[in-house]
Length: 286
Figure: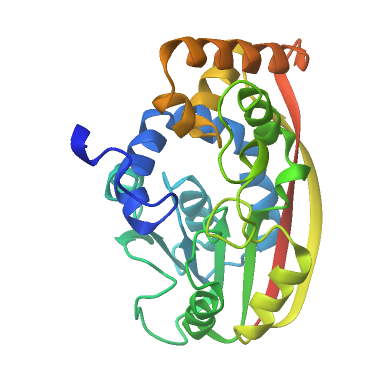
């Protein structure tokens, strides 16, 4: 991305993922996927796909979940992974090359007309929290399911229930001028990682989109953030304070980095930095 475009995208918009957000994800993909490996396992278990099923993986990222699903549905099944970021999708396409029952499309699954009554399962690992109009977007996903089809998604619970992201942000904003939301906490209704964290809102969105039998399972995990250096680095790259750190004068940035390191060091274990994480497994039917 050219320097004049940096930061021009609205955070977590489609343009953001096509630009700075996608670039950052690709640059840090191994670390990010390592943090989320256990969530892949959780999602795959809850999906419980069967041979011969057709599956849509929304916000498929680097394609790891799509590839695992393709293996499980077997040669008579089919998996389509979609994402809005071309640079991330390029990785998925390269990884999935040669898998006959797997394909990847550049598409916004929440708004584009991909067809109707096509899939037995629509699933997503943290890819559905960024819709501008979530009821309409989930309505579009609902239309893609066959009658009797099911939805299985992972989304983060509330910001305050996820210290793996909140703790380094709070430390940074003890030094940096805080944004509109205290300690980096985002507007809970705006597109972003925690937009579906409130269970009442999540249930309302899914039911308003036409889904029935909505179930919400609270899952708590230990987020293994890697070494202290890796954890500090990732807090500066992808956390709520990342943009503020980029824009801060050098002296403030160094002080904020020191504060982040001190906060994370309190959670350093033999396995690296470990912090609590909290997500929903949301299930529903058409």
